[in-house]
Length: 85
Image 1 (cartoon, one colour):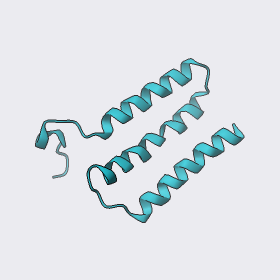
Image 2: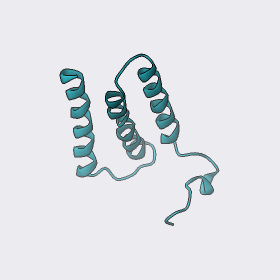
Image 3: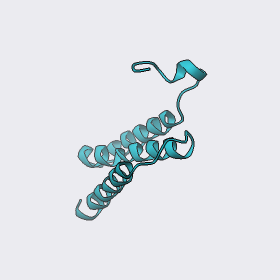
């Protein structure tokens, strides 16, 4: 149901939440090491792709062409940051 937490059913956090927390910690470390915030924030969006992959692999969500396109675009953005940045 809309607005309900997924932890109510099982009592556990969804598996993508630890990944997002780790991604945030990596961004904080990168910024403290001198990486521009704009680069670090953009690269952090890779956690969204990882979360989508967790949904498809572990939670057996349906993989759609839109998810695939979005994941490729995020990956291409990270590559552009690396090449042009």
